[in-house]
Length: 121
Image (cartoon, rainbow, N blue to C red):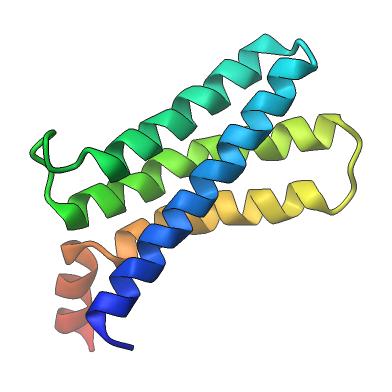
């Protein structure tokens, strides 16, 4: 896959994840469960600000995409816990797995992974 297509796909993934986080935050807000709602809404808005305003914030685009992985991971963990409390059976585990895979993807997309990979393989 070409780098440009890969970058656009990664950015689309972050927008989709931010939309899911914001929708779940709004859902909790309508149920009058304010603490997780504000956590989710703040994480979702932080991801959107990072993705949309990386240039005025003077963040490199690759660092902005990588930091989104680390911002979205705790939000997905909160969603997993909230959905578990709602009594759903399989959905919390999907969000829990995603919460553990997002930081791994952030690490793999970093330069440290490339250095480790070159040294050992």
